[in-house]
Image 1 (tube, rainbow, N blue to C red):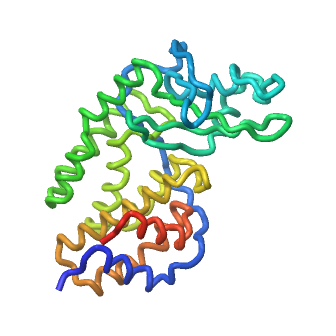
Image 2 (cartoon, rainbow, N blue to C red):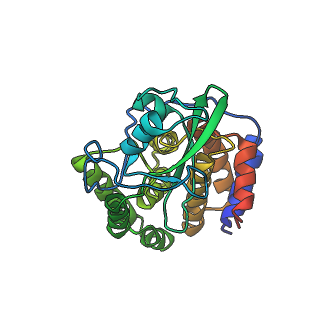
Length: 283
């Protein structure tokens, strides 16, 4: 008898106790991944305006560095001034999370600026220019996430792995960014650990999961992307084992041994993970 993926997961959670938070594990040799870039955003001046900086009307900018420059240089606290004084690196560190994707497929970043009278949240859309819109469209054409999922669901795992490797190689050759918000990179980050588990490379799978999770902000009220990524990874593993007709008890035992390592790598609490899985309608 084979196991529905939810049963495999529940058996695993029972085995590991579904309690507590693991210590965050640094991913050895971690490097950022990004979509195939159409331009070098170090040289792009923002040509966008408008937006109040609220969640409903984010400031449109042109790439990650232009976003950091806006927060570091152009933003003004209530009463004037900017605590970053032009320091883009400090502004980047103030990124607290992301909202979205919105109806256009844009991830909206939220920055917590330490103004004199208290923190001010500033919402910035780094896809607010034609170049970044084109990059987003190119990324979708390069590796459509739904196509990857179709191949994975059909058990064409070699095809998924080949496409994800090609995408990563293209990104490396053309230059990586510090953003990992593209939909195709996101899906490859979910499927790659699952495929490594299937190949018997659990340590590499945990490392790959950690690299993916750590490319997003830590879990907070403003950012749950790491939790969503981990839910996707575990669901992919359980779906894969169900397709391979792995018995329920065996799948539960194997995932029970693996899940605590994944929780530590992503720095996600087991209870938080379980609530997210249930909310996602795992079945």
